[in-house]
Amino acid sequence: MNLRNLTTLADMSRGPESTLKKAIFALVILCLVIIAPRSLAEDLLAPILGTVDAPVEAPTEAPAPTESPAPTESPAPTESPAPAPSASHSTEPSPLPTATGSPSPEASVLTSTDSPTAMASPTPVPPHAISDQSMHIAVPNSVSTDPRAHSVFLPRLHVRGVDTLLVCGYTNATAVSFTQAFPGVEIAGSGSPHFRISGPAHLVMAAFNSDMGARVTASSRAVPGSVVSFSFVALSKPSISQALCNDGSASNNRTISIRALNMDLNMVKDPVRLK
Image (cartoon, rainbow, N blue to C red):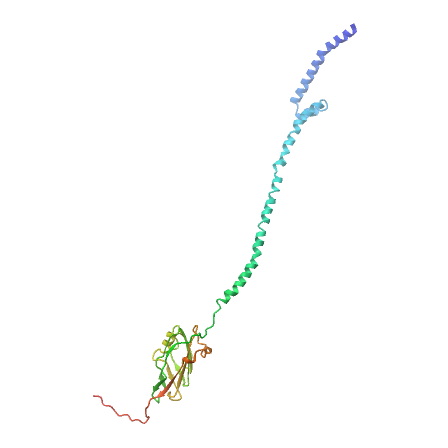
């Protein structure tokens, strides 16, 4: 019993010393941790306090996951859906042009089908004789002149009841002459045996009757015995085509005969005294 009590007393006497040593040792370590650099302190204490390193390394590794949000900041997955709608938009307009392109041939077909009609409608209809050839014609049957004359003026001719007129003429004399130009009138053959004049009826007659009227001339013989034939044709539009001269009505044809006055060539002229 005495030996056990002595051992207990020895342990009790050592207790305060060991506790003091541990406290001093802890203070030394704390000073080293505070004064020495962090890396050096970790290297010194790592083999001694293995268990203490774990909580110390935990905050050092904690910043690493703080850097990990970097991939979260890159919205790569958010951009990936962005091209998807852009592709959908691009694909959506693509059928539209194709749809518009497909009707284009149809539109061209329509235009092609319309073009013949448009071309057919404005195609000019050539001048032709109209069905109604009724008109009023005032032309004398004969003209008397000096039997020795080589030319004679025709009396004025009149035509009514027609809008557009073609006058075709022929003479067995040398020529029939009238004005060469007249506004709104087409003229051909003036000064020759065959002549044509076309236009509004009143202008045609005004051109043919201008000045002293149309003049019939015969160069190789006297003009009496000559004839002048006329064909009056009502047209759809003015034309001096010779092919239209026979398209009129036969009732609208006229002939003027040139006769000699009843005069004796041996007649003697007596002088007449004027008072």
